[in-house]
Length: 407
Ligand SMILES: *Cc1c(COP(=O)(O)O)cnc(C)c1O
Image 1 (cartoon, rainbow, N blue to C red):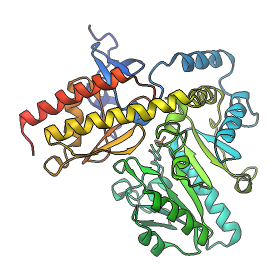
Image 2: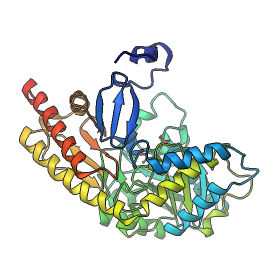
Image 3: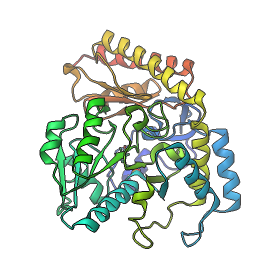
């Protein structure tokens, strides 16, 4: 098949800001767990964007809802409200701890709203109560405030001066958190599973300890469930499995199944902090995004779907561990639900990208989570047969790498 579109990977270097370095194949079509590129090559998608298209590509219900809404109403501004936004907000409050919802367009914006809520809440009590605590290797988005809160120096270098009033502690280390806690802290933000930081789940003990420290210092607990949310963990949100209730929860990624939307969820007691005029977003809560997200949430509320996440997660990690050990690439996996990380063995450290490229050559789309960890995030509704096929392709990819020689 010839490329009729007149654009190719080379076009990227000509006309795009070089902040990304995309792989050579350009996907042009997706269906369920599969993608096809410009040349018609087929790939199994164990990436879902970056844990975004949780119901696979071109899901018939999402497609129907999107096209139906597209024919009715795209946009009205927040001077008016709209039916899809109201229905989605109602559904989210029914299914979670939250009573109130703020809509935006991305994970970073949801976190920005959460941090602003926390600052305003603290300031109202005492201007010194403004410190936000987060964890090293956390990822909360790429705006200046969210990269500053996320504890990864590589994302803030060169962007100074950075916003102040932020402290960092070591993840899964309560003593480290305790050392930075005092009554100046207005909020602690954590990912239940650090996603970009290496698919590292919080221990149960840590999650409960963070809640207790927040309570002791009257600080808000913010759960960043941008990546773990919307069924990815095996429950609608991961906090349910930890048995810890946050004060604020942020989500995005899987919420729109690929259509941009973000949300911040909170309680009645805190929602009033963002009083009329204090915050906003032109596109936040737009009818198209909310209609699609409503359909996503409806699908995720089906028990069969969450059951499938648990079953496919067990199947995938069992298969991965067997292949990883046989080829000497890794000996174990970690994560929650269908967010699975495989930390590479010593001899393969730093080569996660090479493994992803080898998998791509075998028709399997994977992700890295830093240089040393492979990340697997297939669709939540993937079939057992497609998991097996993905494992076969992964096995072949590992074989090409080990034949080429380790290290
Ligand atoms: C992806 C991600 C974000 C940022 O979301 P964007 O939509 O890219 O702004 C924030 N937090 C976590 C945990 C994420 O995985």
